[in-house]
Image (cartoon, rainbow, N blue to C red; front, side):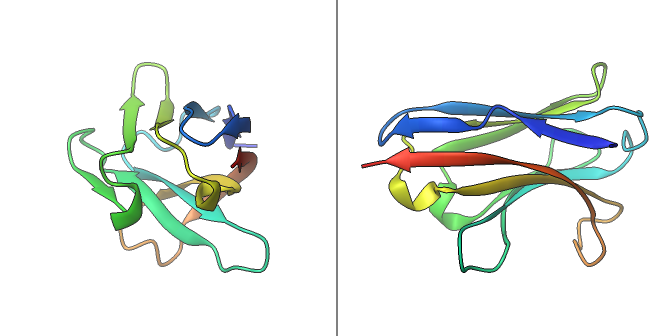
Length: 118
């Protein structure tokens, strides 16, 4: 498995979680990395992304100001800090890699379940 997500769990509304994703084989250092999520019965949706330069970041409108994406190239890791969580953030979160930020043909990693209770 080249992209392995971890850090999910059960948290109360208003709480925080930090998701991590390891590029275990060090193949995506020059790619954009992102987080997507999929709630039951819903399509997978974009949450956040960070460019290969570790500077450019992009967010779904509903998570702006609450979530922060970052990456540590020296450790081949990407993180998603999630604060002020809401029940509607409940989903399986997937990390992904993409060569050009179009997300037309991303490489998907494993998911991690995030459950936010009200």
